[in-house]
Length: 139
Ligand SMILES: [Zn+2]
Ligand SMILES: [Zn+2]
Ligand SMILES: [Zn+2]
Figure (cartoon, rainbow, N blue to C red):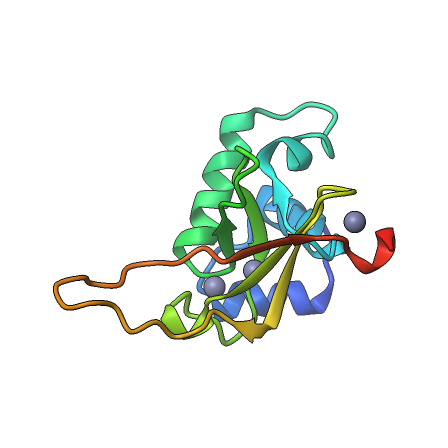
């Protein structure tokens, strides 16, 4: 895959991911969309590929903070690219926007998940903050 963009190569290096051709391909699919994608949607970009291969690749991306997972209540997990400086920690959590018209899910990275002061005895692990509405394309 010689035509992977330079930005992608740098990202792999930064996140310590060995650039196999499958990984490059899936990265490109994700970066060409500006919204989160489900496993099924990624699979649709291929003529023929094992779903487990895609899944394994996404798992490597997830483990190395190249992507993050979104549970938006639609039943399908969505995958979206992380920023360069993302370490997938609490401070990197942001709000996601699910369009009820087109079904696309957008990362609103400029809107961090609000800090929550949990009652005593509760330990924070993760948060999924999804807003439903109509996206600019569907207005
Ligand atoms: Zn991340
Ligand atoms: Zn929409
Ligand atoms: Zn996101």
